[in-house]
Amino acid sequence: MAIKNFNVIDTVYSAVKYDLVLIRYGELALKGEVTRRHFEFTLLDNIKNALDGNKISFELKRERGRFYLYTDKTDQSIYILKKIFGIYSVSPAVKTQSDMESISKYALDISKKVLTKEKSFALRVTRTGNHDFTSQDVAVKVGADICKATKAKVNLTNPYFELFIEIRDKTAFIFTEKIHGAGGLPLGTQGKVLSLVDGPKSLLAAWYLMRRGCEAIFVNLDTKYNKTIRSFAQDWYVHEDIINVNVHGKNLYKKLNEISSEKDCSAIVTAHSLYDAKSKFLTDTKPLKQYTELPVLHPLIVMDQKTITKKCKEIGLKV
Image (cartoon, rainbow, N blue to C red):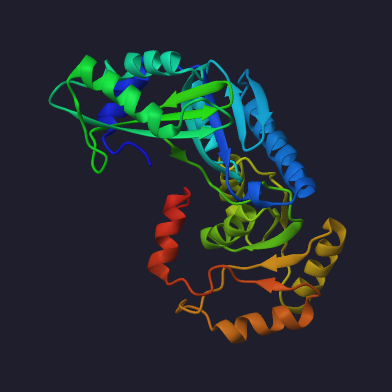
């Protein structure tokens, strides 16, 4: 849950010196041990490549269920991390020891910069490992200390300010927000797909497959979209593998078979939708499925134009 009052976030950001950025991944943790490790290391490589590409100096550490990023460029790093597939959320955090006194001290340092007697707060505490206290013990003790120091009231339902405390073995992390990432699976863990590009909607279709871990080979059917594809690829930190194709009909299908074989692709992705008034879905897709050797995927198939336009805007595409 993120803080709803962005003035609070700005206040905390300007007042607190963060030690690191917590990076969480979601469904990777549900995989078997061998698969999970493969996915984790792929995600680590993707993070390193994106940060290196932006000339950000950093140190990246791995622990089961979490990555820890240490950098002087917290804001810029978070902007990048939000767009790396496989990352569920990130939090700039303060790091301390997992004893009650240390946790309370740092929680008070942050809370005093924000809270007054007119404002309310909530503590969200999680704990992993062996300790002589529970999460509830921490919430009660730290909450009482904050109330005493600031005169603020506890409001667990709709607080002005939320403070998160995450205790992991001998270490505790204190932070004020969880910033959502792209989610999904790390890019490069699920093979390659051919993305047929004839407009921004095609890139949205490709985005859905990339979010599921697929690398996209962009088959550009109109060279005027080269700049759009490059901008999209750079914005989402994916490879700019663009192939311009100027043939149509059966020659196009033959070319797609050649490219898919050369690039070792597993499927073709299009932006066809059942709600697209400008095309006839069955008529348009039948020859593609008849003359190409790969499965054809339509991730936008049940989306209407309004939904497609909204989603394009959300991921930075102009329709």
